[in-house]
Length: 232
Image (cartoon, rainbow, N blue to C red; front, side, top):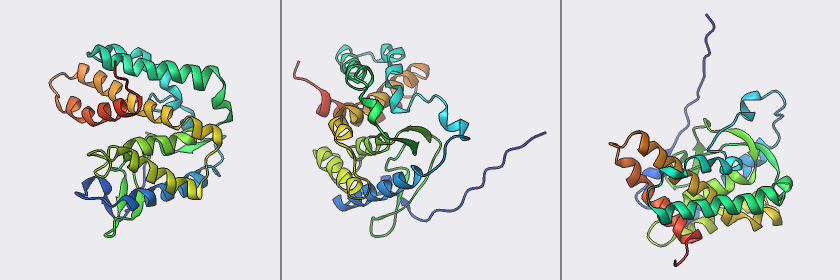
């Protein structure tokens, strides 16, 4: 029989998510790390990488697919919030053809604080978990990372915007984004948060005894409400 062997190297460091305290500059450093990685990933030839072209619901360019899962969100206001994000994505990214100007490349796809390793000085020493890597819009790596920076130990307690700004500052210093990409940053961050809470609600519906799924979603809901919510 045919077997597939996957070889992994050891990456030194501690997951950023395990830090009880996190300096703001750690997020800026993480942004620089991702910016350099994005630039290198953009050099990869993807013609023969068929697996990178697969459909993946967590890929931000597939945000429209969340329509199939929003019924799993029980709270009407929250469901409407996600539907608003999806509708705006359709209008401002897809129908407007804005996405045609986005640079495409292989992306990491899940650059969060659990996948970032830091050294004793809280500077990024490596990144793990490329299981969500696909060929997509390069800007999505940044907006995914900014979304999770807002949920980091630094971003919590009213510092979400500061966390996202620090990450953007670091990334843009080594991998500048375009005006069109900058225009849609908040929407694409909201798309990732919407994906997280919606698919989390779907997972909870499949496994209702797992209350951890709902608890884990709370910070994402709060952050989504911060950047996309209304007073209604």
